[in-house]
Length: 247
Image 1: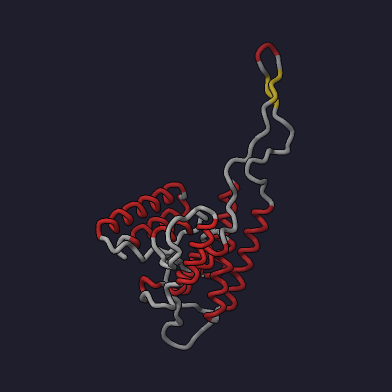
Image 2 (image 1 turned 120 degrees about the vertical axis):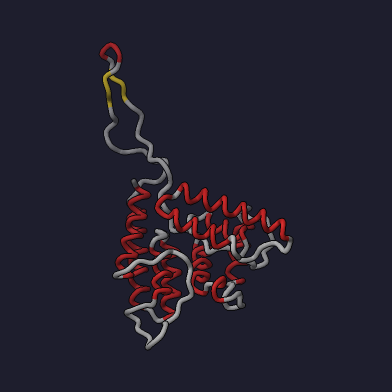
């Protein structure tokens, strides 16, 4: 129930920011579209960017996306996304920590021969959603905004500095054994996913065709496993799996 509460708050934030219409959580390059720039009416690709952040339920990703929106001139939407992130954090902070016990009066039930059995304290299962890792969140927001798969793998779009920062951070934690090369491949995308963030699809693979095929198959399996374990965002994980097969 706790996890659902947090995610619903995130989805409510999407409705608040978008106002109307729906947007799939695929990454898309922001633009002002045809006609004059209107800060109160973002084009569809910007709405998709906002939806992806709001539906994540991750305050760090939401704030990093808000920073991107500020740069693009969408100040109102950025402020709403930050407010939603703060609301989610407040709800998270009101939850018991994982493994905590229910402070209510212990439950007693009748036992054999008239004895009374006192049940052990109720343990809060699972882990409440967290704010995610700031480096992983910033990288994902930047990739969603620049969308290098659609707009080309230019130096401005591929975010090598942020990728290297994530790789270096995870290497120091013992979670990553690859090269700190700034190339956003399946290993880097899986690092992002480890923080509960739906990653931008990887777009660097091995130069060996057979190895690439195995990497893509393993990545697809990992994303579909995530989809099975996260029904609320199943379509987003599955979308990443599908896009990665064609990069």
